[in-house]
Image (cartoon, rainbow, N blue to C red; front, side, top):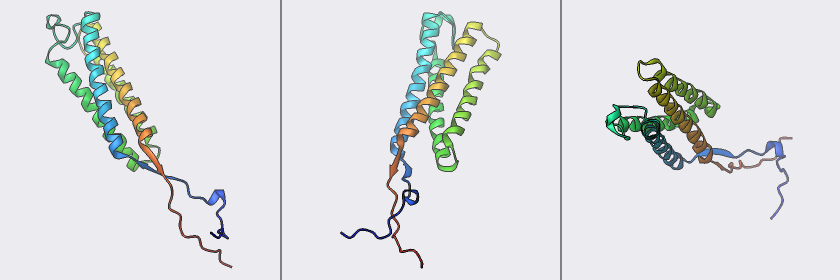
Length: 167
């Protein structure tokens, strides 16, 4: 095989093209949503069962609380799906998508953690809800970014046909 008379220098070689493995990313987003829902459930059980804080219902509702516990877990699940969709959109449309995603999720998490502290309720319930919301937001943010980074595949660039330089 003859050697190419016009090899490319390292500076001229095209770099690998990143491509998102969408199936893998969607699966990771679903898993992130499940983790978020489970954090909500564990947080409610810990607050009600261990610390005896009447979170999401009356104290006589038991460790699981009432239907509000299921709604809270479903809301956390939905937030995980929304975060996955947001990062997918940012990956397709913006420069530095992970940076923007981090800021958005960080600020939304801060709001979700502060709002319970402003409503009139038992102080323990305020703090517990704030901590659970913060844990859910942190988990969603870190897991979604990790999933995106692990779902980006680098395919080799297509080599354009080499032509001799003009003389």
